[in-house]
Image (cartoon, rainbow, N blue to C red; front, top):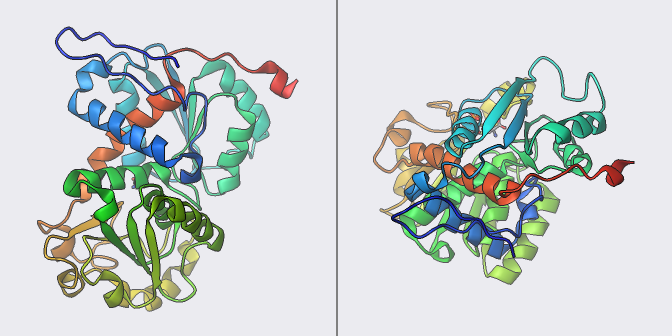
Length: 336
Ligand code: CP
Ligand code: NVA
């Protein structure tokens, strides 16, 4: 087992777990319960002692290709990589899909000669999967139509900071059964945590992801409940989470969704049905006074900016775990 140490005269030297080096983070299904625990341990270290990690990615370059807009994901990856001593190239891919000019395999076999990791925000989940399949450097999903793993990890790290033992936490997600919910569902299962899903009929989570999350939860002791009534979903919970009613790429459905989702708005009435200590969560960007009212998102119960901050800390830990401290050589034989 390889370990890496960092210059620090006064504090014990942090050890970066090496089991995930060279792997991808396309889905939360890529990580095991013990790996997410280790990731949070490292996140905690990098958040509390950032100075110990200033050169963790020295000499590493990360390439980011985004087919969709971003504030948080872009800046937290850029600031995170720079904070670890690495460098980053951002490619605005909003004008055309990543594979419009050349094949994903060809892009992968170019990138792996130059960079230590590839971060992708895409429409099709298959684009991230395909890049991961072809590239011999780690690929990180920075949001696809199916998952948003970096978000869910930051969210559960935030819950861990607020409540401690995640096995005792119940989160209610109300709204659209989208990419963010899928990753939350799998992350809750990995931590043996409890999640209630309050979505309208026809807008629930993907059946395969639900089945996979249930399979994981069986082993970890987590619970997953599907409830269409938002009031029942939030009763007594520790956290209420919501996201946009219309995700990027679904804009043509905006009007129809605006008719269906209002009962799922997180407002003062819904918050009052959660536990008195409950927190409000949102991945952002928020559509104020649609899925959440100003009174809730701006309340003392809201932890949305803690979630946003933790994106950076958790992504630093993800990159350190996947990239490690040593340059990897392209596996030429893999695509000879
Ligand atoms: N939460 C999130 O991923 O935000 P951005 O779309 O701004 O990156
Ligand atoms: N579900 C939203 C998340 C944005 C961060 C979307 O995909 O647009």
